[in-house]
Amino acid sequence: MTSDDVAFLSIRELGALLRKGEVSPVDLAKLYLERLHGIGTAIRAVVTIMDDVALREAKLAESELRGGLDRGPLHGIPYGLKDIVAAAGAPTTWGAPPFVEQSFDREATVVTRLRTAGAVLAAKLATIEIAGGMGYDHPDASTTGPAANPWDPNRWTSGSSSGPAGAVSAAAVPFAIGSDTSGSILFPAAYTGTAGLRATYGRVSRAGAMTLCWTLDRLGPMCRTADDCGLVLEAIAGPDPQDRSSLAQPYRYRRPNPRRSGFRFGVVEGCCDGAEPEVKARFEESLAVLGDIGALESVELPDFPYAEVTQTISGAEAYAAFDEFIASGRTAELKARKAQGHRLAAAVLPAHDYIRAQRIRRLIADSVSELAGRYDALLAPSLGVVACRIDENFEYGLPGASGRRPLNLAGVLSGAPTVSILNGFGEGGLPTGIQFAGAPCAENAILDAAHALEQRLGLSRLRPPLAAAASPGAPHGRAAP
Image (cartoon, rainbow, N blue to C red; front, side, top):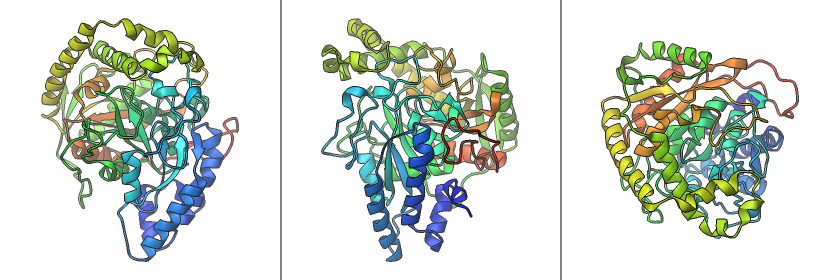
């Protein structure tokens, strides 16, 4: 295999090479560091490349594996970290000019757990400034500029986990940790043809990560496949005394025989309303495949003001999280032109509106969880559009109504898990995604279903045209298996 062939392997496949001695952890670290310096930097997915840390951790993993100590499937596997999560050896910039020199004495729990699992930290990856929490209307609202999509460098990777999505899509790292408050794992995964898992609220400790919205924020894996997402989730999940919202129950993913048939799916009525024709066509083709491995039933989401509730909660909590920063006037230092006015509006939000939104949210959580509990997964397109242009202005979130698609926000407000995977290509050969949403703590059911579809579609082997380490302006060719 060529180095490109190795770079695009899944975590399981890389692990098999490591245990056969066909490649070493140091070899892998050097390979991905080279790609981070090349394609990762070229597409503006990288904030800090951690060469010394990566090589040190890779040498330790190599010594341990040779000595018979196997920490599990992530042992010796490099990864990247969205730059709102603290880690030793690099600043944590939050993607924002006022915080470019910021560092923390204590690193995040998710980083400690990945180190315990033997994973190798290779880079801090780009994010929209303050994870989009101050508002933005253009992809360049980041210290690194707009992250270019490996499928077309004139298109965006979406926010706010822009760097993790781009880096995984371009095989600059095998996996990354992103964050999601209202779609920031699912949307970049859909735009870049990767797999993104927003696990159950509280499944992954947020200690050591930037707080944007206490009751909505989640950390989660962004990978090449749904199976890889499960492997990473097992390593980072679990209770944490530093995060009082973390769930007490442990999570186990590793199973010898993942489920492949007998599923029951709920297809959300109207989920393709307003979607681009090719997005709708790919979704319908996926439904035809899923119909061979399970039963499909049309379902209607409970009628709630999902977008309004999400916006009220996130606006109020983001203002509270950054009230001193906002009061200082330093929002003027942010790149997003609308940042200052966007959060100032939250300053005059009546307390009873926030309380009412949280009460409605409780009703939403109960209703959506009850509906999702009848099925292995609820289904809808991850987004109704393919990736927008990198120089395109848009209203906060994503262009048009696509960022407010109800199944996404139902999952946001219920705290239930959702995974997005590649299910085809739309206009201009750009990726389209399908989301599998489950009941709380039902990650294994949605991951099994997503994995079964991936196996049948065979798309996870495809490489984006910008897969080679070239500049974003260079010519690019067709995706190849």
